[in-house]
Length: 333
Image (cartoon, rainbow, N blue to C red; front, side, top):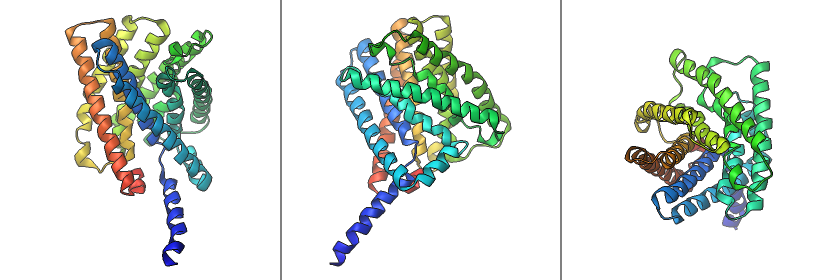
């Protein structure tokens, strides 16, 4: 009798743990999806087995479903916490990771279910545009504090760069104007946002240790911008090359800083912020190696693919282990 009476309480406690589910986990979906695309490009360029891309893409879809369901439960049982996140000057921008996931997953789903991929992309593109408009309006209408200018600010507006990526695979009516909209607005806002965040890093107080992984997001406007530009114009030209070499430069700078992470602070789900920029950089390198074949471009592409793969696999194992051990609240803090 006593054991039976405890079961409902244990069940409720298990659901209540989802109150701590962070939006940063959608960053994991982005990273896994990007890694799947990178391995698909590696299959084309280096003839590596295609099943690697398929398996990683499957993990991305499963992760999206699980995180989306978990966050839906959080919305139903703790709407006040969700509203607080949305209003937060930094955490609120991470709602864009859900919309970016909807824009990226069609890259994986298009060969399997085109209609589902088209629907997800349409929802993601419209939602990202509305979200970008609302965030820019908030920035203009309300005075912002420089301490809130973290790399997460890049996600809502520069996330529009993800709009063109899946279009060539979706067999949609002509979408050139939509692709140009995402590309131009994303790149236009990347410049002032990067400048503001860089100034805050140089002249402002240091970011908290737990936020240090988000620095890798600074690579995204250039790595994703490269892929978005090539998808829109259909070729690698001088401007695309400029975006690519800027990606490599920033990677060298930021990877050097991130080497202190294991000793400065315990693992947090926010570390997933490094996953998609690394995967996007690998994608850019593989695209560039295909356009400009050579031993150096191939070596860079393989090195970035290996680095992104090892990092994302470690993040996945560490996160799953933490959730299995009931550490969700700790990992989210």
